[in-house]
Image 1 (cartoon, rainbow, N blue to C red):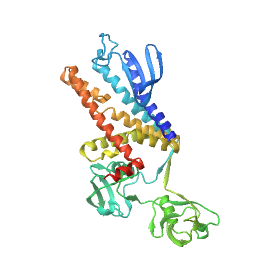
Image 2 (tube, rainbow, N blue to C red):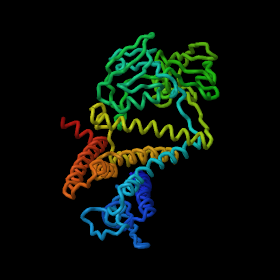
Image 3 (cartoon, one colour):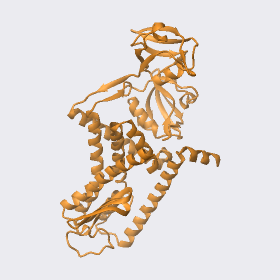
Image 4 (cartoon, one colour):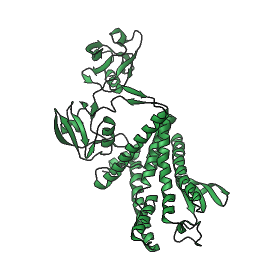
Length: 440
């Protein structure tokens, strides 16, 4: 719990700092007088005044702000050019845009740093979405999807590879979605309702790629070596159950302590069936093998890593836009939204997995924060930009009363959004989820 909280404060603190730094730097560059640079809300934990600017760290790290002279219509104003509302719309636009831009830039830089270290990616991620297996009683099986089908579209989104497929289906939990596929050269459209998987309720229809794990090592004189298995053997099935990932192999073998089971492998392209009796270890069976999933190792140079970072951020940005649009068209469940509690839990999980995992998570959050702040909702940066755009088209400024009503509407939308994410977060806590289930 403490580690999750510390990771959450670190992650959110960095993202908020970078966002507000964007507003701060551009305001200073354009000559707008800054009064306060604050991270967090509520009472001050730390306050330092330099050059007439109050730099503050506040008690609740759920945001931040840069207060500029003459920023709001009801602020005391002298009409001096160093006041925010005295500047041209172009200057104000650049100041407002700087925060989201810094978050998007941070996402590119963080992902670049991660990719520079090299990474393992599933070997099938760039392959066409050819179904290798349909899991039993899954939405795909119920809809009639078969092994060998090639999925080419999820809803209206074309999917060229497995990575795009997972991104497209992930946001459609508990929503009917038409799946377009090719079967023996003929196009078909089947309606599928993805189930919510994992505590984040990611959409899943139960299709697996046509890949298999392999044996990476053997225990000397262990059951597998004595049965004739060799390093490099590709594990096709255990006891007649097809295996796609290493976890499936382990799960199936554990069912046979001191009982013979036939494992089908591929060796140098030839299929073999090898019977083996797993050794009992507690209540499970083991045969003394190390198992590796099919991964590709990427080691791009600085330029290649930066290009890949840009490509991934563009792809993820498209997914975020698609998810947000789906909230309005009801293609995306509101359950996909996360709030502070879920972010704190994930921050702890990624921190435990290592600094590269945490930085990858930070990159994703930073991109989300940047794009969400560009939404045309009053109160957000994008809302202020939207209002200025309408004023520019109308060639007149709105009255203070109209702006206040717009800001109130934006505030109500944000409160509704906050209530939604808080309910989502609470329902993902096991004991609260049980209480909520008991009231239905």
